[in-house]
Length: 340
Image (cartoon, rainbow, N blue to C red; front, side, top):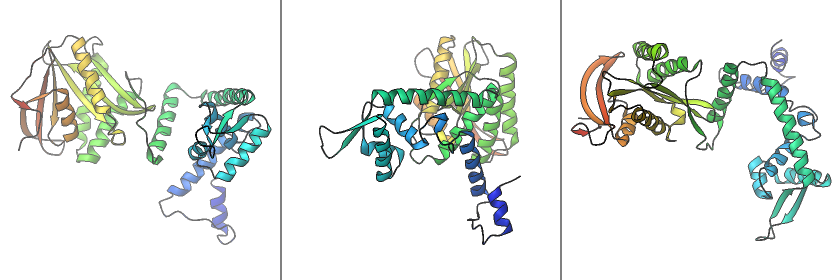
């Protein structure tokens, strides 16, 4: 059927005035998604999740349940609500016996809002209904589709949140679909950031394919880093050229996740595993243009043991080999820094 509002505007723009998007349809698509999603989660229903509470009332109950008394100003700021609107909602909740408001001990001009016993019971019932509704919503989805859904939501939040937090970082083993993501993100990121061609993506695909076909779990491992449930980075630890050597490969952190220590966490995980697996050395190969990765390697104790100009991935580069002695002591004759 299409977008009803857009169809009306096309028939008679003067009768149905709409602000037409100048961003290649981005605004129209966001509005269409908003209409779809608010219908899916029942925001337009008379009560949220079959309860007698509106979305805003439910949000206030949620914030109050998460705290043992909340300053009225803090509650209003957290929800981004107008002072008068906040007061009217709290008045309704107070008349139902769900909240109390008391003057703060330290500043009598300020109010503290607290859930009553009935208010906490109401929240718990609302919370159960909300969880059940979400479980019903995602029940038809496969595990992979659920992961895609959560990742897409994380993408929306990361792009639009103007006050990002450090987030929750989890390092885990790859699941089905993750190895393909490793190849795709390496190819796309390095093409965008450095202009590398598809031969680099082919190299990554070969490394990942070898790992998937024949890696020894006791001696080789890969990690996927998640930030608030969204895939944000990866690294691999694989066997080297001899029994005492491991290789750190395919370190990647997404640009939107930089500055949170993610790369360091991944490298530390690789080093720790290599030690536990009994390797004497951990080696890596990188290129001089990858300055941020080089700083992580240097902080971890890697030493530059060799560098050589080469033409790869569509251009001229300087390849750099680094090594970390896992048995103590230093390796190489100079720090892992760019030369020249």
